[in-house]
Image 1 (spheres, rainbow, N blue to C red):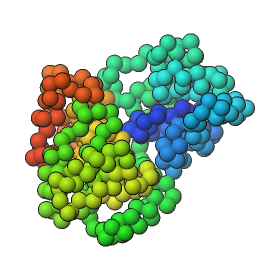
Image 2: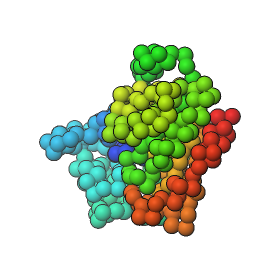
Image 3: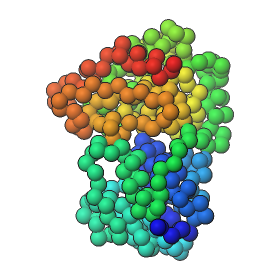
Image 4: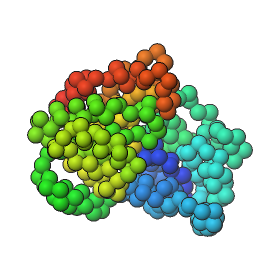
Length: 333
């Protein structure tokens, strides 16, 4: 039996989707150690997004420069964490946990960092376990086990900012659908803009306003979808912070996204979500949520986990507009 902890540090993942798949672990840690002070370290927007659920007591944004990281290490070393869970697989994240002074440091073996961890677990092959269950394996070393997962709580003010944005665009009170045609990982995860546009036209014919969303770097991709969709589309890529984007998704009747952070965010807030998978594994990284459908037609070469494809992405070509439309009907029913 693991003794109750008083001070527990978690180094969060750096990517939105991975951070949202760490939510079962964070809730499990809070349930297993209700009296502990739990601190989390990660990218600022992710820390702020997850903080609303109160699964940790204090969040520390990951500093950009070496001097900032050294200052954070000193702050946490003075706090004296008893244990640290290291979720990113990098050498630097394990070194950070050691420099923070955590006596117990738990993570997966990777990048020759085994000597930096006191409990270095072998990582399952990609897709053998869902990533959220991989994180729970780490938590089990500290006595944490899965508990029911609630919808993601929205940060304060996010719903108001989302409502104001829609009102400013003349969409107050309108039912909306969200399309997420981007995927930072690469083109082998991106269903075509033409098919997203065709799906958007079908959703608009049902009376839905169509919001084409993503990061600022995905604006050109989103604009291409909107151009093919027509006047029913509104491009919002790069126009919201992460919390307001979560609130927009929470208002949506349905969201259809590639395997991306946006899909994970939509599923986490409880929105009916359809996620299109190409080169990656839905067994490993399907979004977590109450109302999720995955559309995937994997050929013999999938999952290859490649960013781009030399043979024309047959995995994505097999995903039809009609097939995604049926998934929308199922998840929204």
